[in-house]
Length: 327
Image (cartoon, rainbow, N blue to C red; front, side, top):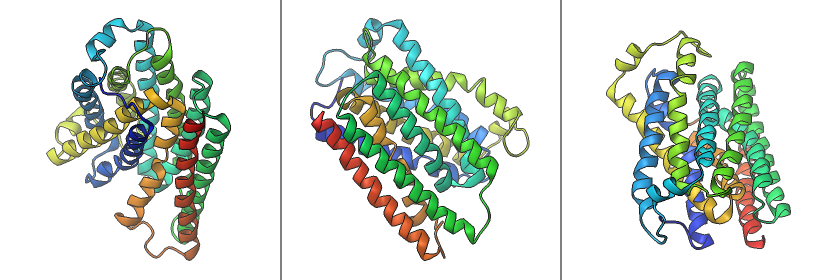
């Protein structure tokens, strides 16, 4: 299977991961009145399909003889279970994130949820796999946290002259962030313990766990939605083909980012790969500014905080990269 043999390649994959994780939610914003509970079925199909495609291509060729099928056969069954449990946890977190996007908007939901996930995920992953200089990694995470705060301040000033942010939406994003960070140590365990799974194999079982859990978690949200009226599978069947396509595309975009992040983690460790990938709010904010015009007419203070956020996130990526090189 293809795995990076040098840090620059791994860094490129982590940056692509960051872009994908910060971009997939745009596909939901492009749908017209498509409830997120229905969108999520297409999204879950997309992440599973792309993980299988990459496992059967990049994961079955390249610089090492241990391809996808052989890796699955030789790995400890417990690692398969860890990967699937990680997928289930992620799925609940991501459903809450999409709900948060619907309640408070893309640029508010991402920094709150992903900021928390960044801290939880890096700390717990590093506890399982000590890769990289802990002081530099901690400094990089601290810079990213401050960047999240700057992003929040930018939107606080924007919303001060518009509508108030939903308290319910913020709570949903907080819970999403806690859960989003909890899946990372399960991936670390599957990648490092005993006879481990390879990154492509982890991605397949991770997304399979996410997809299967939809039949419990997403069905619950369909019947007991966080916002709006209940929806049914007949509503899903009657949706526009373009909305189904956008949902699958969103899953493919997120799935590419996730596989690349796992593959990069096979060289640099999960904590470092996860930390750089979770700079996704910077990308999401760029979409909000450049495409969705969320800062049209914003006060000067919002733009100053946004500028500080971008600088701090870029510094965080540089410092976290140095944490690997110095480790």
